[in-house]
Each structure stands twice: as C-alpha cells, then as structure tokens.
Image: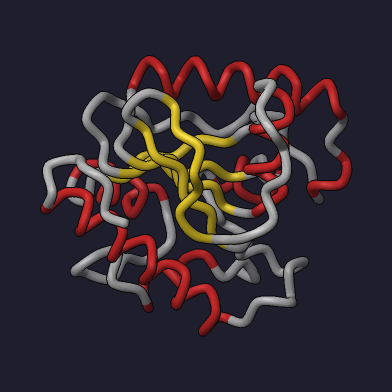
Length: 186
C-alpha cells in the first residue's frame, strides 16, 4: 500500500495527527495536498510558525526541521473520504499510533478533528466521549493532547477564520508549555 511517510523523532514540540491520507496527498507526496483543504491557509494564517510556507514536501521538511512539528495519521490507508474507513482500520491505527507516541514522546499530540481523536480514544481503551476542540484532559506519559477542527473541505461547519483561531490556541498552549518547562499551561 502506498501512503505518506511519518515525520517523527524524539523531542518534537508537536505531532500533527490526521485522520488518513487522501489519494491526492499520496500522489503529491505530502500531507494536505488537496487544494481545497484549508490546512495550509490556516497554518499560514496562524501563529504556529514565524514564516509562511507553500504547500509541498519542502514545507513538511521545514515544519519538521525548523518548527519541530511532526506528521502522521491515525490510519495510514488512503481513501478519498474518511467515511470509507472501517473499525478495523481504526483499531489497528490507534494501537500503532499509541506505540509511536510512546516511542517518540512529543510534547503535544495535535489531533486534526474530533473524529480522529475519538477513534484514538475508543480503540486504545479510553473514554471516547471527545466532543470539543482545545486542550484535552487525557495524556500519554509526557504527551498532552490537543484537538482542532478537521480542515477538510467536507467539514464546512468551520470557517478558515475558525481554523486559524483554533491553531492560534494551539500555538499559545505550546508556547506556555515550553516556557514552563513542560508543566501544565492551564
């Protein structure tokens, strides 16, 4: 199966966790390649980075190398839409993701979408009652969890401005966490 590679290493500030790659992204070779996906516009409009980036594999590398942001998905199997995923995909993917998070221990696991986070919780045996964006009460050792709306064009209930607001909240959470040496930013 052709899919997108993970961009993971120890000591990352943030690991962005998507639902699964789209065939468009797999063909292009980078995350969020669909030109209708609002991820890159929201990221560039937010305070998560100090420099804007153009969508593409070089941008992924820049985020990884300069901004300490990694990338993965809960399910690595590409589909045109998320509702084509099955329980078996989430069951395997959530366990694999948990192993990755335990191995690399990023400061923040950034779940792109409540569906992504809910399925992670459900299939790792935790309460799956995730219903809001923002900082979450759950943790995995040193890793804190943060949820933002999915930027997919299928998720039209959130505007680009809404996405930027959520990404800015993540930037503020990250900055407070880093300034306090890892203690809770509240």
